[in-house]
Length: 568
Image (cartoon, rainbow, N blue to C red):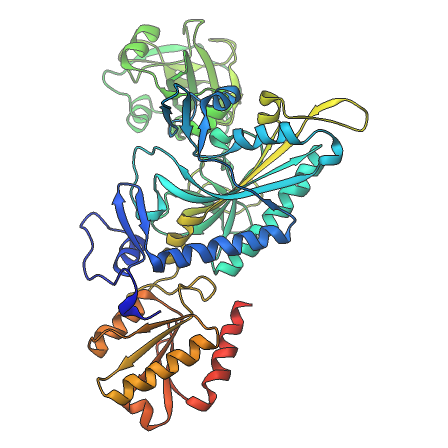
């Protein structure tokens, strides 16, 4: 492709609100154009990258026996109501057709694929099967910033497996996970696999394929001594179990006017912070739940929501807190709460003796509070948010916090959808059973940005060879007729040989041409100039190396062939 004929050129400036590297470089390099918040045009250069990633994904999944299909973007709302997710997924865009049918724009396709499965899979002989599509999706995100890292419309690979039992699901899960490792290796991304939360997808086991990057919205905790890694939403960690009093003391109410912060409260009561208690009231759908946790810990709302199984979880309003506790916010405690309030305590509270808790009276706190003596023993569950510096649960190591971009996510859905939607099969014993399902997704358009975040320098993008828009960036330097003719000849020879070449034939200064070449980031730059012609050579420079070298025209073909063999 001659650059003078290419649609979409490099730009010097970007909008002021474009702040992260991938967003800036993809716009400046002429890869994407923003239509509106969260909506992007892929220009020819960007589309070539996108389609190369798309093809790699399809090839590796096909190697694992995955079959490809295509499902609609528009779904009847009835399927989502059947699964129970119609009012549960907050990014679901809903609309009504001219015929009065309630519809949604698909953010994901579990309902549609389950509907297909129940219509086509009849017996155990039809299993196992893994079906995949690479399809555009839409999520009505409240906030769509960060370029391609968080968009409303995006291209996604989503595969779904159907098995007769959990053993089969484990095999399908492993098969797709292995394909994912091959995909990311071919693309050129270093991936960290972490344990993750399933969120609104449902199911049990879940893993995320992460690209560690400072701009990543996800937070992962990684052990410094063993392979343990988990998304902070899912992570568990060792907590220090402090020595407790051997003898229980009578509960006592103490006035501490205006004192609600745990540090200030511990100092006032002459206690350690871990002896204080945070009791926080949450609105879980229509119910109110009081959650207790040690004062030196924080509550993970994701863990709490998963435990409760609620659709919505929010902090209870000031009015609700005052009505149920009789006190202002900050003085809630587990003693004498109304029976309508469910009390849940984090595992850190389980062995505590003589601890502090709010007295449900403004300005007052109880000390020497004990389970069963002063209030019924609550449900104990892990709702503590793991954090950097915590101990690892699998070794003696310490957890470190990293920012990361989610590149892929795999779930063991189990029977969540098959049971709700009647996706059953007849087993060998003649009995009808629900299928075991798995779900596997890669954000294809997001990967374009993730690669740029991971692989760029001060000059621009450094594309891996397998997904670069072109293999070779040919630049002619000088206005002499002989130079132009030689560059044209080389361009024709390279393209006739089947190589992908971007011929930068704009009439610009050498400095501008080289800067644009670095910005666009094609792996190999070849330069034809008067100087190179005098030596019967071509200047050879790899994008990820600082220095250029002179290669004789006689050796150029074999050297290019060797370089491009990396693609295979």
